[in-house]
Image (tube, rainbow, N blue to C red; front, side, top):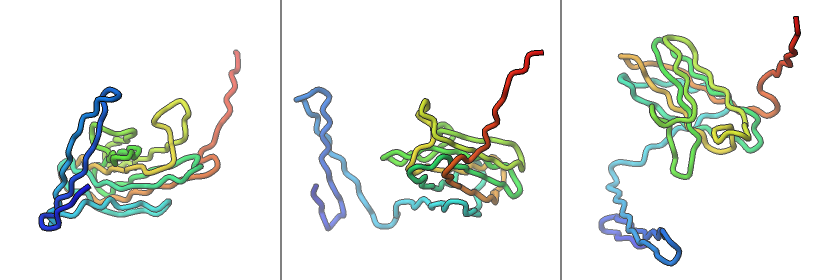
Length: 171
């Protein structure tokens, strides 16, 4: 990797081999102009509500939540104060992967002032079950006006839900 201090341009060579022995070299350049810092995604602390406002017109506010190793569940809650807001979740990847209207792992879209809750538990049979690491939480405004809300993410150890045994009764 090389850098030019005068223009703050950094270059990195990437090698992508389609077949063994036939590499394709690609040069990636990223310029930092110093006036636009990378966006900082706020971190939610387990069990601590975060109050905020999302602008009108379908805009998103995004947060991140770190699920600890060994967690048996994570609950994500969104309480609108006045209007209709929706809750989106997406498991983080090495590239970030914030949720959007079309790319998400879970979403809750209850109407009006109803609170939104998503409980995610480990599921060995699903790629979308709870795993340790960063999860991104998106709050989307479905209302015509800016909306205030409160979002909370909580991780659990032990069993975060009650299992009720059902039995079949023949009549």
